[in-house]
Length: 460
Image (cartoon, rainbow, N blue to C red):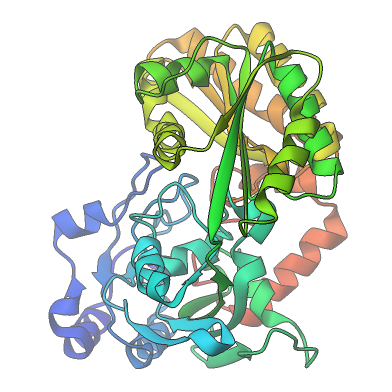
């Protein structure tokens, strides 16, 4: 692996990409960071415009032993797109073509640089949408969504990126172009490499085209806003909601600190409470009232303070916008945060929430919790002052305890952010030796030289 680029390599990329190859310090620095706020400048940044250039780039990197880190728009919070091992960043921002929309078969073919929100806007006139809707949908790319198996609030009903993909075209670490999956919703032909590549964070292959499974836009939506005296009551309500037959299209959770932030920073009209659930149902005009009534019955129980029907779309939208503003608003509580997106089985959610409260008391730090409760996916934000040595030490001591708690409840380290570098040291806690060895064998088969996103996902 090289930390400085060979002259022959630099010349070859200049010939191949022209102004799509940059080695100036500003570009290398800008593309060496992501939303984790960490940075390691790249040795060069490549901007390919088609799959042929991607394949030639990989083969040149293999010839010269240069590492490759694929990148969308850098919204990762786990350090997944930072070139810690040097080498080049391959930005897919110029590959943003929506190749085709097949409305009659409910699939679309896109390049990896397409922005999620732009795809949704193109699909809406066809009465369709692609279900993954992360909070960063206005900035993040489809390639990035697939790389980390992004989800979002509607994953509780419609699934994550992995549940909404049909096929891929990708370039492996061997420099080979492979086509996996198909345009059909049923396919029992050969190994399922499509779903293997989704969530692999650019460590196995570089996606150059994706065939996405689309869903019809629901004709109507209605929502409930439910306030509880404490987080335990809200978590128990989530377990009840998910145990009955009517699936909500969204089920979001906020603790007391989030409620205050949504009101004071996001402008949401919310009273003080221990916890809040945002519940949404969708469907046709005949079935929707029955679904909403069933969800309301399940939400009712011990600790309930207020249950309102947010039939006004504007009020519901305002509340969701306040929810999306929570993550950056946490900076108003403390200058530093460790944001983890742990997941447990929904029935264990009350135990997770109580455990997080206990960690907050034990380490004397705010730990703010919100997230996609219908999937058991909680964003636990450990807040601290990095310049305070004691707080910094306590925050980083609380992190492994959070992961240990999650794993003890049958959970997993990440629901949608991925592993990157932030959680790779804990992979050995989540998986046994033979399982990790199998993952390494898969990595070796796709990327024998270890050039694709080195130092990510798998522990040393």
